Image (cartoon, rainbow, N blue to C red; front, side, top):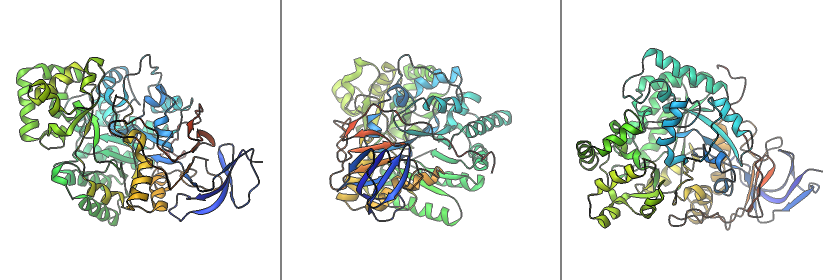
Length: 533
C-alpha cells in the first residue's frame, strides 16, 4: 500500500501533452505508479475535477535568506512552487567572506531584509546548500553570483580585473559548481558586477560551459539599449559555449513599447545559430528592485558608506539629479527617470512607513520639494534599504515573450517590505488564471510545460519536473476552473485560490488549502559526476 493515492485527476505531466485522467500513487518521496483503478493508499485524495501537475519551478527567486529566516514560506508553496532558483542578479551570500557579507547585507537589504540574529554559519556554496538541507519548505537550486565574486576578489572599484583576479574568480566559480551550483548569475546594472567587461564574462562563462552550468544574467539594460544588451549576452554565450538563460526577459520603458517581437526574433536567430537560449518572465507589468539601484553606477564605487556620502554632498546631488532627470542614468537602464513610475514598496525604518505605497512624485508634491531631493533624503534616512515597484512594463511585450518556446516562469519575488510586489504570492496562479483561462494566451498543457518540464530541463534535472514513475513527488493539485491570484498591489500578501494541495518530496505543504508545518525541501544540486565536460 502506497503512502498516498491521488485518484481520478486530470494529469498534466509537464511535457506539454494534453491531460489524461489517471490515478497517481506516491510512496515516500517518489511517484511509484500512474494508471487507472490503482489500489487505495494509506491516504487517498479524491481529485475529481482537479488537475495534477508537477510542482512549479520558479526560475528567479530572491528568497536566499528568507527561506531560512522564515521557513513557513507560504508565499511560495501556496502558489504551487516546489523548487526555486536562488543566487540571482549577481548578488547573494555564497561564496562569502566577512567583509563582503557586511557590505552585501546593506546593499541588498531591500531584497532580503536584515533578519535579526541570523546565523551566517557558511562561507562556501557547499556550506549554504548544506544549510538548506537542514529543512526548508520547498526545494532550492543555486547560482553562483558573479557580482559577489567580484566584490570578494576585486572590490567595488570600477576597473578591469587583473589576470590574477580573474583567475581567482574562475577558481571560486569552479569550486561553487563542484559543490552543486547550477550555474552563474550576473547583475549588470548593479555594482560591482556591472564593472565586468564582456571579455571577463566570457572567461567566467567558459568555466560554466566546462561544467555543464548555465549563465543567467540580469543584463546591462532593459530600457534604452535593451536589444544591444541582449545581444551582448548572446555573444557571451556564443563565444564561451555555455547555455544562456535570459532571466526576467522583459522589454520595458517607453523606448521598447511594442518591441517584444524583436527580442523573440533575436532569440530565434541565436538558437538557429546553435546557441542554447531559454528565458523566464513574470506575468505583470511593473518590476521591482531597490530604490538605490536606479542611481548612476558611479555613485556606488567604494561601497554603501561612500554612496551615502555622495548622497549627502550638494555637488554630487546636483550631478546625480541631472543624470537621472536629463540624461538617463545607467541605473535606470539609460532612460530619463519618471518619478511617477517609482512607487515605494518597503522601508527598513518604521519612521518612513508613511512613504509606502506612494510614488516619489506624490511624496515630492506633498512635501513641496523637488522629486530628486525627496529621493536622496529617503535613501539616506533608510540607509539604502528601501524597495520599490517600477511601473514601466508593456502588456504586448509580456504576451509576445510569454508565448515563445524558450519561455519559463520566474517570480523575481521580493518577500520583504510592507507592500512587496504581488508576484511574490501570485505569479504562477496568475499564469493559470489570467493568461490561460481568461485570456487564452497559452494553452493549459503548454503553460504547465513552461512552468515545470521546460525549466527542469534547463536545470538538467532527470527526476523532477514531470509526472513520471520514479520521479520525486513534487506535485500540485489545482482547479483549472477557479485557480487565480488574489494578491494585489494594495493587498499583496494574499494566498491564491484554487490550489488545495501541494506536495514537496511526497510531503503535503499545502493540505486542503492550508499550510502545514512540514519542511520537506532541501538543496537540489547540479548533477554529480560532471567535473569538466
